[in-house]
Length: 158
Image 1 (tube, one colour):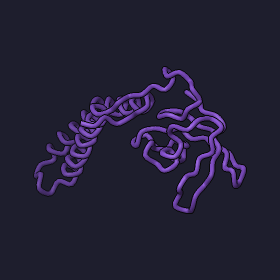
Image 2: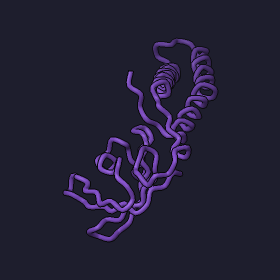
Image 3: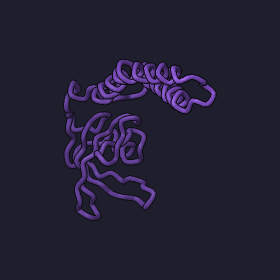
Image 4: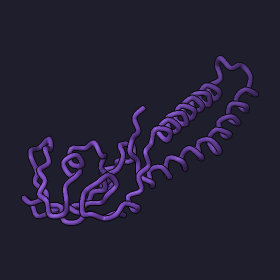
């Protein structure tokens, strides 16, 4: 089975969510089902059906997270010697050569990606163009709106 890269922070976030789902949400839903059962006829009991639907969603999410954690290859970039090379987990300062604007991205696993927080998936076009390059290199990113040239200013292991 293939292993999928994940940052240490991504692993911690998934483990915390798993803990909350198992120890907080699961007992709350079981209690809601028990209370709904006490109301009588289950065929026409909307509370019961809603609680069962929540239970199904919760259990599905628990299975999904356990699967992701089981197939995760956790990479802690802070333990890797700094080389100035872009690798999974690094944070990169880039300059757009056309607009002179700067942007900072962190390359993370697919489940951790959040463009609003400048965390891009390792499978994104920008990350694929950056991986393996070094500080000072000029990288051409094939974006849907056309090619964009970036210069790699700095690579951080944070």
